[in-house]
Image (cartoon, one colour):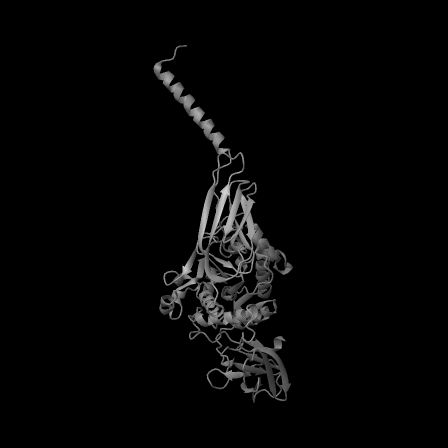
Length: 491
């Protein structure tokens, strides 16, 4: 059969298209060449935790050789068949100097489609690294805090580095985060966590070492999304929460109320990165949604889950006791205060009491984040950095003794002695007899004790202190740290 010229051209074009199709198919089935890549937590301006082995990890072509050089130390490893690699360099000491890290890759013999690649990470410092997490009071930025404008203007601290994690929740643990390290300056500090910044600034001035501050917080969130699934699975009381997390474990995006969801997206990728410790400011949403049942167990799961994931032992976990707010259910806040105080029984924890920092009980966001950060820093300075003479807390109830028509209270953390913050009679004490009918009480400081009584209760059995959502009591120690709420019948 003789083909016309048009048919010949059509046949030729069809053959060319078929050839191109099969060539494309072959190429797409070959492993793609990949330049060496790092997670965002390892990048310019990063802060390395002193005294800990330095983990460096990332991605490259399968079985590709990767070499990392940091200062005078160098080490080589190979990516696995999935392209992942990790190596560990020796621990480093804190100091004012900056470092450069070089990461180079070399293809495995026979990988003709892959080429050597290199990354240079600059302006690295070595010091103390802390992460701050929780809901809106941890997320609350410097720019919106008390004296925010002045704080921003004076925030020129090139030896403090900031890293802010974007908000995201996933059912599957993520291995990277879309963020970057920046030097602390008036141009960068405004959107960083105020509590974490004021904490870090205090340590920076006291310890005279560089600081790395990682903010990973999301307003209005419960404790459950911040906790890893494995931590729920380890506690039979939290089995229902674990099951809820497992149901969405294959999904990319989930609600920010999903258990483990924000841990997967906003914490998991950070866990190979060495830190000194963590700050936590959360609980408001669990009260508001009447979901503070088993909150002690949930805090234990969160702390234990994070510590296991980081593999750094029982690192310091410092948290904030919530401030007075009238919007909670009746007694919701005192009950949470009681649970938060109980959490001090978890090893290597510390708690900042904040009942005195608000001047508006109608606002769930006290603007005074300076005192919150400074009080958290007291715990770190004393317990983590060995400043043993530091008083870390306001008075915490220790024991009671009934003496006739009075109850005598003793406290831990009296510091230099007990005082009334404003010089007025002590407030927020109530007393009850066996009928459990609490009435306002007279309270007097006698030495390092408080003696509580009422003409209406002749045979007292119990005392409550600051047992109200809006209590702003005036009992404190001479260091100016407020006393924590309590009820003696809980002992």
